[in-house]
Picture (spheres, helix red, strand yellow):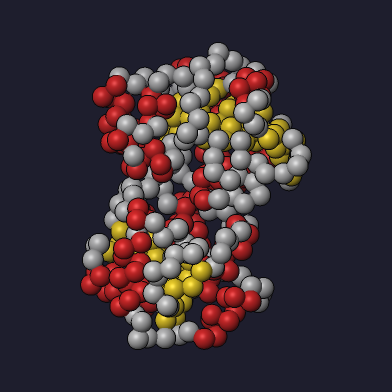
Length: 358
């Protein structure tokens, strides 16, 4: 089986900016290890190297630009069996080709569905299947599919936990910034998102101000945001392979996103690295919070946030209980479980063609 990916944004390589990019890289690497997979190719408009093509971990990467995007996609679609389409801003063309075309739903599609957004691309009939990472995401798809009479069937396969990247490190932390912070403060909270309004900037500032008189700090990729409280420290851009150190040295991960996320990679990554999460009950985070007490849900007010953070700290200090809660996610979303779901789905649609039914 030949499997390919098309991605239009954001920075896929080398930065792997955000959960979408990490999902693509993780899947590509895992597919390449599978005995039923002959080759894996990633085509992206956001590969930033001097090479037009290169190979990494057995995966072939092809850099696209404005002059060759359509040409490369058409060529790939006629030479691969499965074409996974991860795009938010690129209008995907109608293609009659060899490959089964699968459109992946991402957070931006779910969060802006009621505004028209890009959801219409996954409803236009140019794909064989739409892939949703949760039942919540599928429900949004079905709601808007009915409105415009979309005909593309939707499959649900969750994202997986890459335990090669996300785990509790046994070795010492190689990041001086984190070592300094950990020695100086009693508690460290991690806010892994850019502090924009939709990701909970207002709540971040309110919570940070409420703990100014305590020996506690909040770290995150804050950039040059000048109005953040003095106990908020910018981490700069965090490379994927280093994220585990930020999660693992932190007492609690703060996920104050008000957008309905289709899955929430941050939540499962954090728990896998030994750090509980405090998050708002929006999107699929609500369902993850029902699976494990390591993802604690709170209301959108300071009193509820503080109360829930205190509960998360209690769980963090109870190693045995936390391990049991983390195992609930590992049992459901380990890469072996999820990768098998993908491969079995691909095999089925290649064998049965349009007759595939869940």
